[in-house]
Length: 285
Image 1 (cartoon, helix red, strand yellow):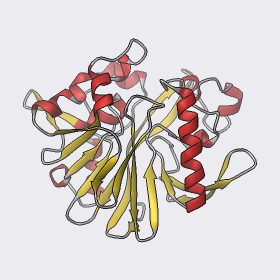
Image 2 (image 1 turned 120 degrees about the vertical axis):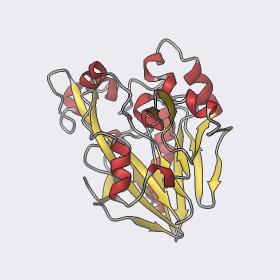
Image 3 (image 1 turned 180 degrees about the vertical axis):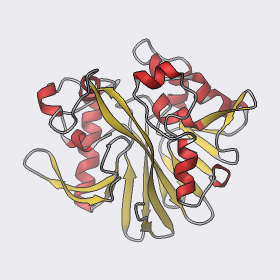
């Protein structure tokens, strides 16, 4: 188990609920395979291994979970296609490892509503789809909410209505309009390159800062500035967002946490010969 990181009144801990596979070409956009496969080898179907990672932010009173992973509502065919490997009730199992249950989570921040981030936001209970965290308030951006309800042809396969519509029906959803503070020391940063209203989560305390980057920078390989996912709606905006985030993180010594890197939960960076280099790693699987 990875040791927690203390940031003032907040304790943060990355949680890991499983792995899955996506097409390597889609994950790295226009970058040739000969470059990305050095760090992310592909299987026979060209899928690379990715983590479902979350961040738990806890001060003893509020327990804030960032992202909900795949969940268990996908069909057997989808599980095979995406090479999903996770225990039954994966996120509950990850929470149990740190002495918590879904009932004790007070807030769930969804970086966005793609199925690999919001799938675990709801569960099937008694034949009905209900919030997986019954006492939590869920947060998403209005721009993301509107897109998820009426997605474009490009990204409609990324959204599954059952992952998020029940949150509104059960009165657990809070829609945000732009960046802001969720709790003292926890702030939402909006980055629209990957998708409309994508949220990064910034935690500050005790002289330290940590950012859960979501799909703005999903793996260590994406630290290279030109390495941008083919899934991104606005790749040039992603490039600008990466440059701004990494420059400030390097200057101020921030911890940066990944959602999909299969081996590295978090890092600190410095400017290097090629974009940015890792100077410190946080834990490991």
